[in-house]
Length: 292
Image (cartoon, rainbow, N blue to C red; front, side):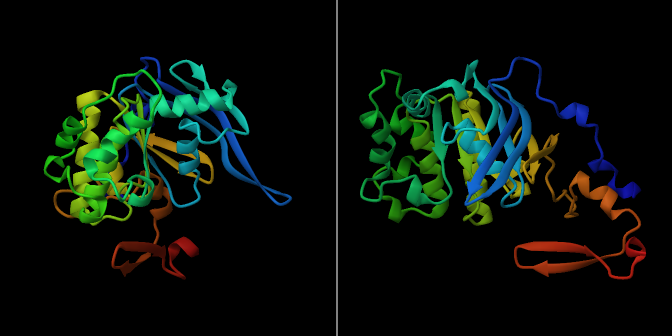
């Protein structure tokens, strides 16, 4: 087990700096009612997110990570607990105030272009659309400036159908920033992209994070994408398991690093690998020491 040492670090180093969090979740529960059954999506989550932080929320499908995103974005309400954004408790806001909060303070980047882009408008028109439809008096960012920042200045007059999937997602980032939101929420933004396109999208997130100081919360099941964030939190079965500084799952020598929480499971275990085109699955060998 000594060769796995680089994965073992104190969780005390993973806490967000104590500068006063922009976003605070306290004892947050979310229960969805399905017929006569309650399904627990979140089970008492506590989480602080700093102003200007790029945070990755990692977990498998159904873990509760998208529920966290929807609650921060004011798209849903918790069953219990509080969600504070810059000192405002979202659970106390009425529907009209929540709508205003989403329009003025939140930018969304969804998985897939259909939810992000209007297909019959060119990219510059898409970026300008939030300013046209908004009734607020806040400052608007210049569309060409945003497109330059995400590397799409030469695609401004193209319609979405003429762009690659990665270019469409970078355009979505520019659109989400048009009304100068304080927070950018991204739901699996690289899930449908090849590796090169995913890198370009993640570069765009980092660029806008550094240029504008916007706080980014990205949910993903992709550990490579998560490694580009400032900090990572892992969610499973509605619980926040741990916080960590992201580590690239593949080191410079091409060796794969496994998640820290896998280490106790690996102790004295005989494993076998199952290789698929986009993933490698490890499982205990039947009859090995771990099963004895």
